[in-house]
Length: 145
Image (cartoon, rainbow, N blue to C red; front, side, top):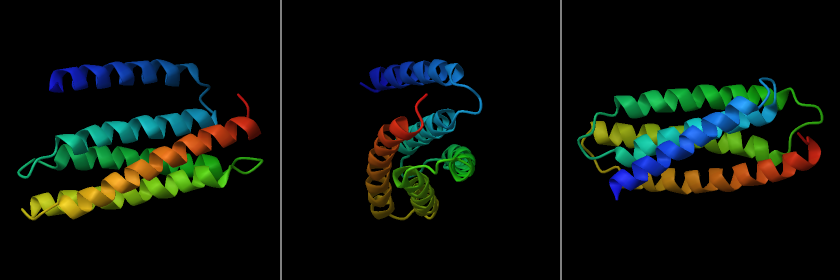
């Protein structure tokens, strides 16, 4: 089952890479999609964490998410007309996820119980998915490709 999940994930990432390459460099959708893809890679790292895991790869993935999210926020700030609040909500939710992820890593390093911080992460991730879908739907109406 793990091998199937990994193969499916790799296939989705390859599909996403092709889709990302097809978007214009300056398109807000490119930044949004890049952030979402980077976040999914970090989630994959999160799913691989175990009580005695080396959290360095996970923290590196979080750094990439933070950079992508910061660039996305800058893109949204410069858009005219302004982006929908669900889009800025997405960047806020992703920033919150990064904090919860760092809490999970801290708990694992301290050999503590990461279950509460992991639960907060999962809740925030689910909210980010809803925010992303809402952003994409609303932005396609205001800023058609």
